[in-house]
Length: 375
Image (cartoon, rainbow, N blue to C red; front, side, top):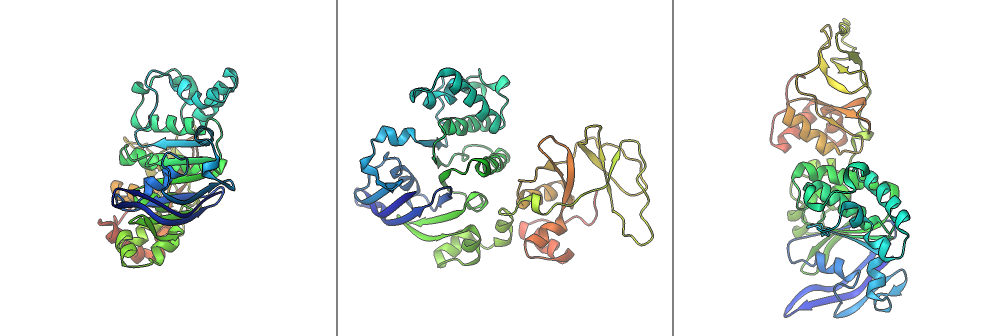
């Protein structure tokens, strides 16, 4: 879909991109990563002619890029940047409708599409459509930016460190939401980041750049398992087991649980110890309120337990366990209903470390200690 052939770009005496060959296939999410100045953003901006190459050729949809009018090219490619770039004098609705209206889409159709997209990115249209950008949090503004980039249903999304300006918690949530959206819409995405964990979590293909050229082009799994050289090995670091967890969703590793309503007594564990070691307490809507041991009365916790959705990563689950001092985390559906739990043992098995010893090794890698009992 997008092809770079012998592409170079120079600023003064320095090569920003040097003799780049790269193929980006339709529907693929390609992440460009590397040190500052390695050519990531220049490569991305050449895809929509914000930057023109000095030599070589970029092709899009089988045509040389120079045969496209720049404005037509850009209207057909969504663009999301770190600083969001929302128009401060326009409402959220007007921001999302910008490109469809420029393309001549009737207002009612554009606004209906905007409401659909706001819902898709997790923002209630009734609450957000009339807000101004100054009334949004950083995470909300990024969601609006993604909705605006998708408004004209472009086949390509260019994303230049889109989640780089938000806090780590919001960043993880935005990554999860974006993965969920990408599974629905299957866009061709070029995504720039400095964050290896983000690259491993999101990418179909990672392009690790060095001095304007790819040092390695590989799937995240291959990049972590088979670094091409010492530079790549140093860049990916030693904690590869933890990084691999970012590629595995909770949905493939969680298990069903025993549940009780508040006030009910948990069954005693039988003599063979084959029964559950704990039971989850839920409210009338099925939302988790806490856990109790066998034989105890089901009582809600004062602080609600952390819960993850099936498309969260096992790395997020491990982080929650270490923060709470627990060995399990609740798994909920999009309505907040408890559907199971993810355990430290399951995470260890997914990382290739098995048994309780594997769990201990994982915790050492993460720099903390596994709790010896479930609170």
